[in-house]
Length: 332
Image 1 (cartoon, rainbow, N blue to C red):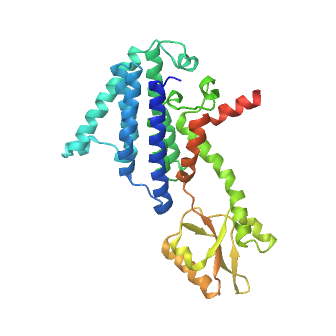
Image 2: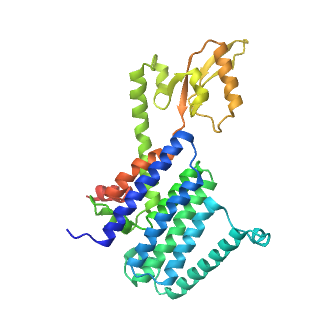
Image 3: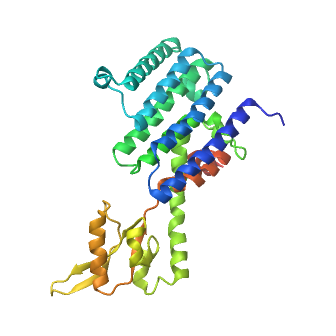
């Protein structure tokens, strides 16, 4: 079988995704934080591979500058937004970035004028001028980043690292033609599919359905399900020693409550708190439980989304977009 340049770029992108996302998932698991330097470092191969892909497709200068505008938009999540005030106050970086913004904007406007004969419908049907379709697909990456950005700001995505990871994936895989998909052609044949970054988010979300099964199995193995009422917690929480609470990334579900007759009793809540309590508040709760002789408590693990996005890359790369696969299965 001939090895095409598209295949080489696709599998190279897959290797970059595997390593870059894997490192981010590990850092998020250990420290619940992924430094911006990680995304700045791994954005370089993503942008380089995108430039090679555009070169391979014969992109014109407006498409390159439109891609530059997309990268500039994504960069605000890591570098912040450059402002005229900071530029006037002597910030050299802001001046350079503002020039970058300006040139990229020129590219977007020029591309819209140059490729105005091609519309979104032509892109969906893949029927029209090749460069016009490529310009629309390049501009469409900005739409994906905007969706992720809004989800982050509206707290639909709680972690900044999760949002930055999805933006990075959007740059690394700007279209499905960049994804190898050796085991299925369903996504390539579908007319309407989710963007690659959002498809990865969906695959990662599907992994959450496995958690209750794993949690129940683990609690059964460890003997944490001592009474039928423990099943209320056993499918999404686990027990750990009270002394470990301050050193683990967990939400404590066991607490104390003063009853109407003045007695203090130990109670277990089924839901994690909406906000993470400060360390001194947690320490106070731990001390209250220790005073009652409690040695182990129910906790909900703080599971970072990146830990699920990393293995989710396997079905994404191998078989493609989940809703397209589902529709193909339902119609067959």
